[in-house]
Length: 238
Ligand SMILES: C[S@@+](CC[C@H](N)C(=O)[O-])C[C@H]1O[C@@H](n2cnc3c(N)ncnc32)[C@H](O)[C@@H]1O
Image (cartoon, rainbow, N blue to C red; front, side, top):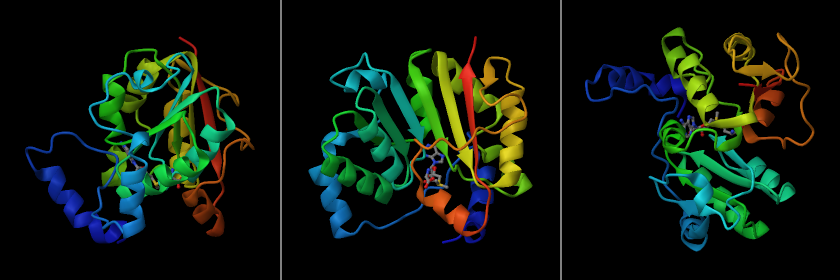
């Protein structure tokens, strides 16, 4: 279903009194097929149950640097990164259950012991983390929320970035990528004006696409539509 078709529901939710917090995602009812159900069952060791508290405690080497990926989609690039960096721990947070199933299936095939995933709003999970406990936060091809009235749902806004900064270690990084040019400009505007963050490409610039960041599903779609990809890497400096 397209965002267009879902919009009336979004507007209604915004008006409900009990729905106080604006979220950055749409939960979709996506029925699971048999192999996805089997994957969730067979690879449940990769899955954390919310609430999770300090994410580091769920790893056999909690002292290793922690990367948190927000909205990993189908998870292929997250699995590849965890495989390429066994000296780090990875947690992927996603609300799309078929994506969680696919990710744990591939993590199981790869025999990873440094990756966990969970179905939750990443904002809630970040709030429960101790301050200065995460080495890297990754946000690859977040929903661009193209309509003006939905801009408040964009992940990169001052309020959410203040939370990310609070949870990053000093010297830790926030890495975002997008194929939506207006969102890239928006991200740069927000991030370049955060006094605790330093743009590793220099103010006003996007970061050259790192070859160590695997292609994601939404990135491929963006490239097929002729979109330019922008990466941003910001370091927490105070
Ligand atoms: C456009 S998709 C991109 C998926 C993937 N990163 C890729 O590049 O293929 C954005 C994903 O972020 C997830 N998402 C957005 N906000 C989130 C949040 N606050 N917590 C967890 N997942 C979130 C959505 O469910 C969606 O699957």
